[in-house]
Image (tube, rainbow, N blue to C red; front, top):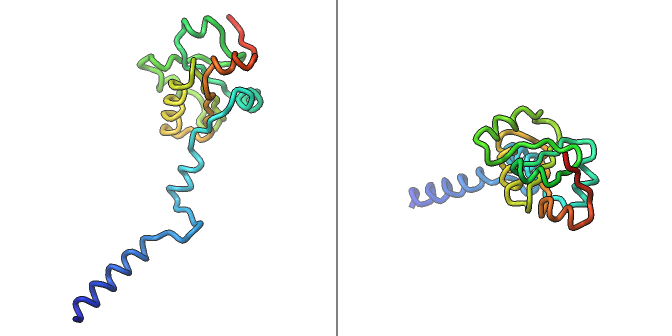
Amino acid sequence: MKKTQILVLSVLFAILSCETRKGEKTEGQTEAAKSTVQKLSPREFQEKSSHAIILDVRTPEEVAAGKIAGAISIDFYRSDFLDKAKEIPKDKEIFVYCAVGARSAEAAGLLVKEGFTSVYHLEGGIRAWTAQGLPVIRE
């Protein structure tokens, strides 16, 4: 009987000691909350990115068709994409876009994993941007 009581108390203690108090975040949860990709509509992207780093992850051929003014281009498909992206300061806001949103979502996720803290992603990519009548430039 004593062994059963000790076992029950041990299990109960283990369960209670591993729980986080309601509303309390652990250090890992707090860090993860800081470092998530935020999806933005074309209008939100335009409003928030005006004084930040805009990263176009499309191919050079796609960029030649038009890009968002001020965007820097790093082709996501190049083997050195991450090396080039790491040259961007990690504490700056980064606004990432591609053609339709899939590539930039993946690129943004990689940036967060590399320690970038403020990463935004254009939902629908440049296609959604132009569909909203927002401007592109050709260089």
